[in-house]
Amino acid sequence: MASPQLSAPIQRSLAISTQSLTKRFDRRPVVSDVHLDIASGDVYGLIGPNGAGKTTLIRMLALIEEPTIGEIHFNGQRYDRHNTAEIKRYLGYLPDDFPLYDDLNVWDYLDYFARLYRLREPRRSRRLYEVLELVQLTHKHKAPISTLSRGMKQRLGLARTVLHEPMILLLDEPVSGLDPIARMQFREIIKTLQSAGMTILISSHVLSDLAELCTSIGMMELGYLVESASLQDLYARLSQQQILLSTLGSLDDLTRELKHSPFIQSVEPVSETQLKVAFSGNQEDSADLLRSLIQAGIPLTEFHCTQEDLETIFLKLGHQQAS
Ligand SMILES: Nc1ncnc2c1ncn2[C@@H]1O[C@H](COP(=O)(O)OP(=O)(O)OP(=O)(O)O)[C@@H](O)[C@H]1O
Image (cartoon, rainbow, N blue to C red):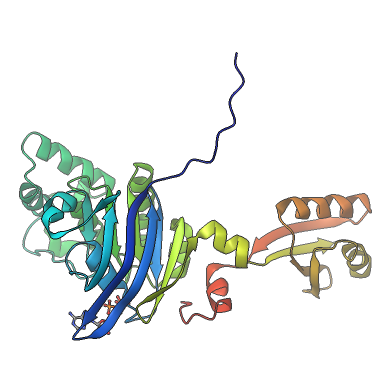
């Protein structure tokens, strides 16, 4: 059998790409010179303080707000006024204040939008069952919308947004105001949509939600995209690794051995048996350290590597957002 060929890293195409994207209201810049690239299949988290311009940027990407200057490309196709209808077919947009008709039941609400998307029977009913299953509302299909919890309403909004099987999803603060369980349920659905191949942009104020969900993060401030990178890059570039070590022996012996490693930046006692170490090496370096401590006969009972979280990273970058 032929041996597998080494291949170059796969270059993913861009689902969304903007150049110099700018929006002014009455000459006041709200989004300024945004160059945003989102690779196909990414879940891109957009964060930023209130008024930073996230909603306005998303509305431009959803083709609801006309840019003052700049270009938007979707899957390589440049948006202009003539192809709006064509591009909207593969966009799904969930605004932060989407309307729900309280006197309709769940099925009729979705059916109404499915008809607007011109889905015909039997395809329409099949698609309604699929999206209800996806958002875990099958058992509520006859329930009046007014009786749903906030989390269910958000999931219903998401169901409506994906009815026409868009390739790109734009979600504006979809988890704001939800309790932790509802947020978790929402995250699970987003993961399912990503694994089905969708590219997803999601804005939020909750960094920890985005850290669990996103492959890339962008940060807006005063209309500018001040940071945009893959989560992996951000962690590699800015997150300090920490190691918690506990021993049955003396902390002095452990500290002496630790000093042989060039990657130890600081050692801080946590208790009489535990130390916290700031570590500048990578995972292989930490494995080497563990091996050397055991070889030196240190009776370790704990060796736990952690990384600084996104909040700490953004604080380090000097950005305001760290909620
Ligand atoms: N249609 C409009 N006309 C005038 N100003 C507007 C309009 N839409 C938004 N703005 C202003 O643009 C700025 C950015 O608003 P935007 O809603 O995009 O920010 P945001 O980052 O989404 O904020 P939040 O996190 O509070 O939702 C705000 O000062 C807002 O008042």
